Image 1: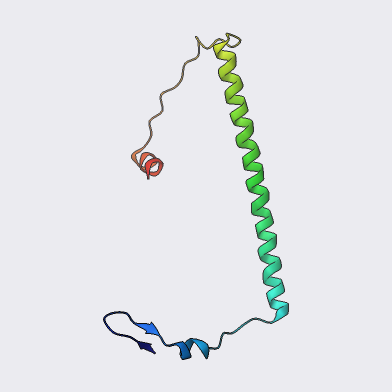
Image 2: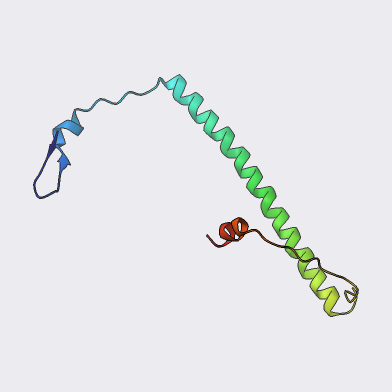
Length: 95
């Protein structure tokens, strides 16, 4: 059903015009929409929770930086352990 020349093959208009598409019943379509809406709501709630957590972590970080800078928190005795990242972790981080 393709036509055209010079590598510009395309489907003929009549083929598309007369092509029959199977559709589920209205009842089934409503079930599909309800399912998608339900899952979308769950995803939206998860995104909202994650954004709130990110905001709280950013606030904590900013407060901690301010407390260290102003001397409210003494970090001179804190030791940070050295962590070795595997090459796979590094590849994932930078890809």
